[in-house]
Amino acid sequence: MKNRIISIIEKALGKILATGQMGDIAIPAIELETTRDPVHGDYATNIAMILSSRLKTNPRQVAKMICDQLPEDGEVIAKVEIAGPGFINFFIRDEVWHAALEKVDREGVHYGYSDTGKGQRVQVEFVSANPTGPLHIGHARGAVVGDVLANILQATGYQVSREYYINDAGNQMFNLGRSVLYRYYEILGREIVFPESCYQGDYILDIAREIIEKEGRIYLERSEDEVIPYFTDYAAAIILAGIKEDLSQFGVVFDLYFSERALYKDDGVAVILRELEQEGHIYREEGTSWFRTTAFGDEKDRVVVRQNGEPTYFAADIAYHKNKYERGFSWVIDIWGADHHGYLPRMSAGIQALGYRADALKIVLVQLVSLLRGGKPVGMSTRSGEFVTLREVVDEVGKDAARYNFLMRRTDSPLDFDLELAKEQTNENPVYYVQYAHARIASILRLAADRGFVVPSYGEVNLSLLTMPEELTLMKALTRFPEIVAGAANALEPHRLTFFLNDLASLFHSYYNKCKVISEDDSLTRARIFLMKILLIVLKNNLKLLGVSAPDKM
RNA sequence: GGGCGAUUAGCUCAGAUGGAUAGAGCGUUGGCCUCCGAAGCCAAAGGCCCUGGGUUCGAGUCCCAGAUCGCCCA
Image 1 (cartoon, rainbow, N blue to C red):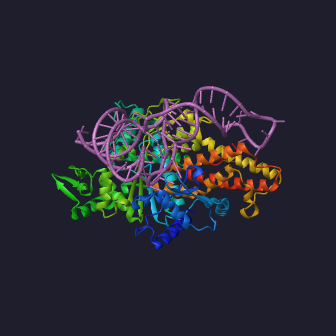
Image 2 (image 1 turned 90 degrees about the horizontal axis):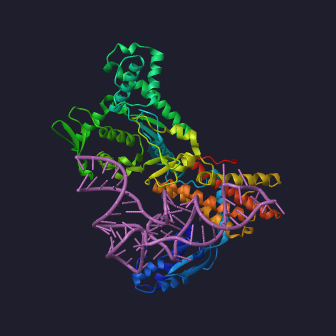
Image 3 (image 1 turned 60 degrees about the horizontal axis):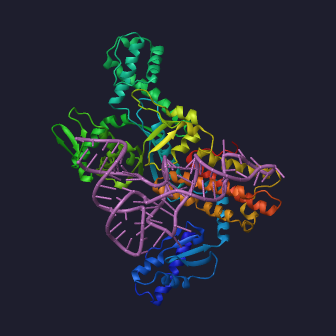
């Protein structure tokens, strides 16, 4: 639609240039925007104002020249107006909007999808929490954002893979094993002081009990160093299984769980470091290996191997990202907590040193969540074991409300999550507003069916009967859905979908209160049923991208 | 001390590549169910878009400086 009008404008400009009235200037890119106020038509362009500033003439005069050259066939454009300082406003014929609904009807569950991604392989890595304890509310936001971004990218034609990176090779894993072992000692009666640095949560006790149940006291005899790796693996396996289970309850499923340990197999990390050293990206100083990240814009160089020979997380991350690209992903998206933002320049430097373009890695920072209950903050700390788990939140407020609440803000804006509010099934809770619209429409269609109406297809209704301003507004909004999805994908901003959804629901509720879909007039009723059918499709497709259910009754 | 982000209605927040009279929810006030689902709708009140400069036909949006808040780093 937009492009059609732009090309019409271009043609008009071409004619003017040919007459030489404007002298010899280049035509700038024509920008056509959708207007805010219907008084300004459907689309507007500022081209006359831009040209006039170059020509040093009156913008309205330039606009007049352009308008005079616009064709008058009236196939698409109903009216053109010059307004304000020199805008050219385009009014689109109603029939054009009617015709646009055909596409929605035809594409159905695929409406809104596009192929702009052209099948490029994209990896979205998210959550990636250490398997040292259950996921908590802070992880939940990242989980939803990653999941929905993946959905959106899929909808825009990318081939998407969801991945969870398991940091299972570091110090805190050792600490996990030690925590379980000490609880094991404790339960079996050995007197110990449980260190503060260890994980305090009850789940540690549960794991220790399970080991005792299955294997008894046999580990009491052996040395800590000998036993801890076993305890670590045992605990990590149980915790990871729990994480997977919690995520799946939350509607998040990964294609791959990638273990950090796999990177160290066959000396993998060391090999990559040697390669980078040969290429001059790494240098040594007093036994420490440094990555020259400053060469790629980082503020200082970073350690990759410590004096004791132990590689840093950064070293593993470089190896991991190399691995990602070697698996054929042309584009990699990492979802990080915003508190890691300081890590961004070195990661970018890392992949550039590996020879990949800086824009092959996109990092989405997700801001902190403050958990509230009835307006009061709920404390959280993994170590101390005082936290609200993802599982508890999902059990309490439900998957739909939880997901929707995390999607109501830009990802880079901090978010308050109030358990009481999210649980309330009232108008305080936006997810119900949208779901209610869906259920209401479904209910209308049920009633229509009872009255003997069959839901019609595009060719079976006369849409010119839909003359209410609300109906036209609704149609225009519905045809914007593909743009919204594409925009959300392009900007990696999932919240745009929730705002659009809210707008649609609002348009519908307003329309619903103004007139009745089912009336005495059969052909009008059929046209309106068709409009409701189309609206239902868009609501459902949008909700699906968010991973939120679209109930027919509630 | 350095870096990143934020600052828009009483509160929580949207404002896509700079556009015409600044948007929503909550809260407040007042209306709307004999009528397809009131988990809804309509209306009103409420704003030096943090401050000061700059860029230009035009700035909530872009640039610079400052203030305040949050986070990261030494």
